[in-house]
Length: 368
Length: 98
Image 1 (spheres, chains in turn blue, orange):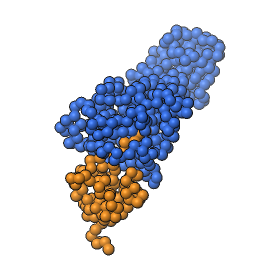
Image 2 (cartoon, chains in turn yellow, orange):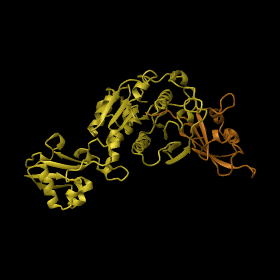
Image 3 (cartoon, helix red, strand yellow):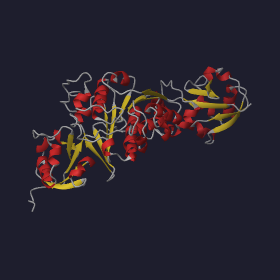
Image 4 (cartoon, chains in turn brown, cyan):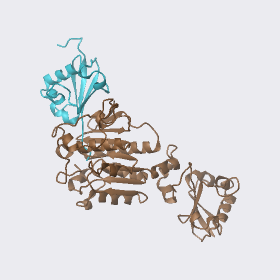
């Protein structure tokens, strides 16, 4: 029986650098022996000391793991596809199907990611506040990367004026809830992920319930009251918060990790209502959303993988007009009422009162 | 005529404040301290100082000022001394995310 065998990148050097080869055999065991005959040394990569298939090697027949079939005795038919996939790094119970190995190949071949890193990405969950200008690129890039669970909070519907910059939505989505439009687009890019929609405003009453199940929180909110709310809730729940903001031609980004400062350390008090315009009032260059949004997505991935230096205690300033990136230092303020040495805030407050203005509702869309 | 003892420093503002500086992102100013520099900018661009300070004469808490990338809150506030070549960044909070 002649079958196709998919060879993952780590083993391709054994088979003349090919992604797939033909092999003969009536069962999986026969095919593996045949591979070793064709490519001496192949078996040594996949068997353990007792000659059995090593525990870190998964074999799939037509995308089904042989553990769910008849193991190495699984019979084969002509033209079947057999895939031999190594599972690297201990504790990995997340299977990487052949589809994923191909989809994420550009991650898998990087030493800083590899299959163990990809598994971390798949096992993580990220909540994105707002499916608008910033939320869109962040959600998109995290979905493409394979983040296993992406939650999106937005109670607004898609509006034509959103389409200038909110890349998750298209003309056909006008009028449908943003979270639903987001979910459709994200799974069409990557069906392997789970998208959880929260079609509700985030408030002091529901913030803990919404945020708790996630590992990371990304801020794509468009008003101060929500920023303070999300900051406080994330800190109190000990979740890292990846913050970003944009207006006109300027952008800012930083990463808050509990214990190393928070939004209140940077901005202890909000501006009086009307002092700082919203995007709806002052405008924003659409493409800027991608710049700050992709920085936020990259920060999330760096935290998941544990690589590089996150923007902790650093505020990135982006000036699109002069095309300058600068970084200023931010610190934990010892007198911060939330995360300082003597905190006075232990629960969520009335943020609209704190900011002196109501959180924009459907008439002035959440999406800005 | 500028006294040689008074440094000339660069003051940079974000887009929202540029309407007060004649549309310029960066302007040159003089002063021995951060407060003096802001006074100097205000003399040439009236209304500027009002954006930084409240009625009690204290810096607004939603505006951050960085001297050479360090938050002046931790270096002595408006009385922080400045020297030739220093760069002052004035950053009000941005909320836009959508």
